[in-house]
View: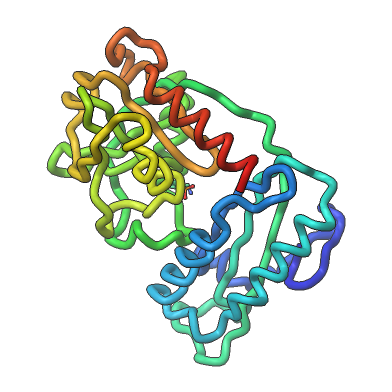
Length: 272
Ligand code: PMP
């Protein structure tokens, strides 16, 4: 879908002068659509609003129009278990870092079947080279792209990003958390990480899984000493991390809390 038009993929065109091309100047969201329902749509729209505000874009984007476009796209799509992706850029203009105040947003949306569920992942560690606005879901993902490719090259699925103090912030497209005893630990919501919708969902369920939440960053050593290490995200759902840089976490198998969280997430997606 380009703005209000649903078009065949081969005909989906945006201007070469779109600021997303020159600068990655825009924001995005990815939402699960499962058995006729968009999962956690309000939370995604709220995060989108925050991203837009921090990007000085909010005044020119109509959030109700975004909602209507997403609703229309999923209702016209034949896919019942899908990943809905959309991005909103700061419009079209000849290349110039500055922008005028009367820009018009451009909107691009794709829907893909969700058919690559995985329960487990191996990860590498990688320096977190990102900027100081990682709480904004911006199109600028170059450090994430490079770290993800480094993981692939190393035969791993994801990369845990490690900051200059040796603390894990998150992964390239997922949040990271660990289980140790009866504690579920994950990095606090600062500008260093994306406030993941799946992260929030798991923290809300911790009590049901018999865990207390601790929002405190952890090191790679602490991750390796955990009972369970988990990555979470809209695309990745809930995955047990079995190995970090080739070293096993606990017995190198997906743990019981991870499995329980995953089951509860899938139930909620189907039921919401
Ligand atoms: N961190 C990053 C950097 C991400 O790209 C994602 C995926 N959007 C997440 C975390 C997980 O967020 P969510 O659970 O909202 O998909």
